[in-house]
Image (cartoon, rainbow, N blue to C red; front, side, top):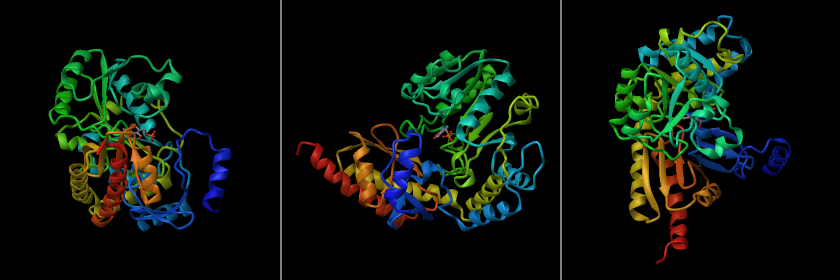
Length: 399
Ligand SMILES: Cc1ncc(COP(=O)(O)O)c(C=O)c1O
């Protein structure tokens, strides 16, 4: 099928829930993807951060194929070798305190589980989340998500959620009490524009949750699994959360969610109170196990730190040269540039010039490339962007 045919069918039948880009991606390799006509794009969208070890990595593809030939379906009520192998590898890269894991199918599901478990464990109802925070769009996760554009058509949402200012210590201190079940926080806010909190803020949240007995839940769905140059972004702040939510790239883009905590916290939920039919599916587990193997063997977390620092410096240089970039933010390969205007047209021009980018809010360009991206590919992205922005600058600013 060519792009026009693919678009014709999808436009006719797919629910119109997404703002769509005018291209059809049909294959990929490493940090590049190809459209239906064979045109190549450097992929800084990375399937919204789900492609971490590179597109169609042979080791991951082989693990999926082998498992699919062996067993595709196996519910969590039965033991399974692929699931056991994934769990051994997964707990091996997570802090030892997070050794009890619930497997589901998406980020929102991982957050739903965290909300329920923290309420059950503490016997409390109140959840503190943050302004500009994003935690997904199912009804519980949406109650923690801040932006009214996502929430307003679906109210009333789940009660007892409060949103306080991100990065501000006093507002959390005022909001938290012995009635707080959990504080749910992104260590770096992703969807709302790559916002990195002050260095002492997460440690202070840790202290406050200790003092009040609330569960500190780190939503590492976008930041986690090496994206920021460490397995968990919380490590940058020397904070150990009570619970984490992971998803996105764990299984190289197959659907997975992880909620991890200690045995005492996870043990508060009784058998049957929470479940998910596909959670821990053998094919997804095999993909995730292979993904962790590749992350470690190819030292991709180190690469995310190294190439991420190079990428950020290139963006800062571009900022210094051009007057239309307000700020460059982020860690590792979770980067954003805040522009002085809407970024929609930049993303469209980048597509025409062979680069895929994301937005994060109206005026932030977001970069979530696979961790295998190389410096020469970063150079290609930056020179494409510079050419586009020079034109924008001429058009937008008085000379
Ligand atoms: C921090 C964070 N939490 C939760 C989610 C929701 O994940 P999903 O879309 O897999 O439900 C996302 C998705 O972008 C996210 O970035």
